[in-house]
Length: 82
Image 1: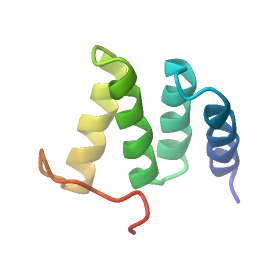
Image 2 (image 1 turned 30 degrees about the vertical axis):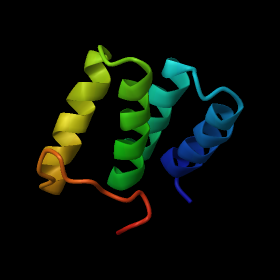
Image 3 (image 1 turned 60 degrees about the vertical axis):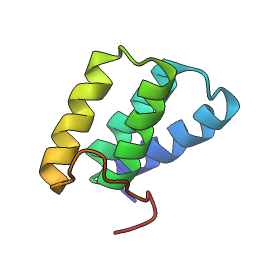
Image 4 (image 1 turned 90 degrees about the vertical axis):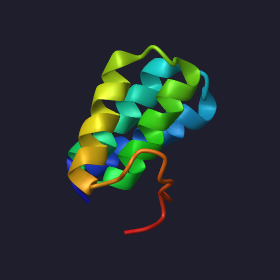
């Protein structure tokens, strides 16, 4: 497992302890994105915008991930699909 994937797992554990913490949710997304796990990153950044709809960095990362994955607005994804 790479360092980013290990970091994403660690942030998942921390986020479970405090799921209202926007900073942990955002870091979770960054780690997953850097690990190359787009679906996991998208799910994490979506958690961020649920907590803070004005979190511009989360919106920017979502936009990039949606574009890179060719996901159309309104299409739902599962964090468990490849």
